[in-house]
Image 1 (cartoon, chains in turn purple, red):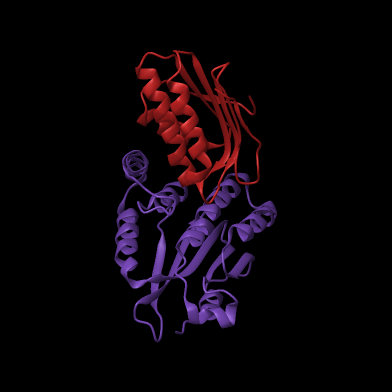
Image 2 (cartoon, rainbow over the protein chains, first blue to last red):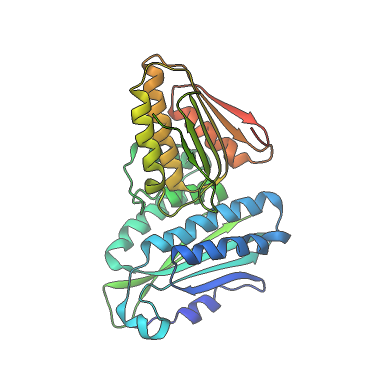
Length: 182
Length: 127
């Protein structure tokens, strides 16, 4: 099983990295990182800061719920649940990048969901959000894509993603996701 | 039935549900990883409360942040209240937001668009 997370992450960095983490995303880790992440946003304008925090919480909790455990990672990382999050300054705003291993069978759902969202106007995204929250049954882990709809709505930007093959395991992909908040 | 009071934590809001006063207050951040688990006792409390004799009920809610799973749980709470409203209870929901917090204002509008019971959007720092 092989995918070079460090190389992928380096390709995502700008000159100003506000926060990065590669490893497990436990509830305790999330508890510890949120206050320091808020401090990092001191120089960011008020309107953007609140949105960044909100979307950061959605992204990090997506990792908490959706990382696919890979047993062969345990030796290198001390855990089999490995994901990555990166917060950088990008122009006047901030970009959040996440990466995690997923089962290949989830590729189609994610691709379809994000591609569809990216075609919608702001009003259509708003309507979809309201319909989804009202009518869809979703579990703690999500399932209706409400988190992504919320990100598209709050940022007004297209969501970017890419799936990378993982050498030696054709059932696993590395899912890279970016959202710009400006 | 008993009053519920839950103190605020870094990821969960202050909650007060007072059956005597008919007053429910929710205040702070609601960003737990497991929202369903957090809100379950509140939903159960409301089920029992709605079995009581008719009472005027006020809900005051002021959130700084809430994640999408909390937004669904809050809608579930509001839907319980809407059932009471349709049965003839006086139910008023006050959704507080900061002046410059457009997203929180829009969230209030989302709930207004979904529900028929009255939700007032109140621009205010505190309640």
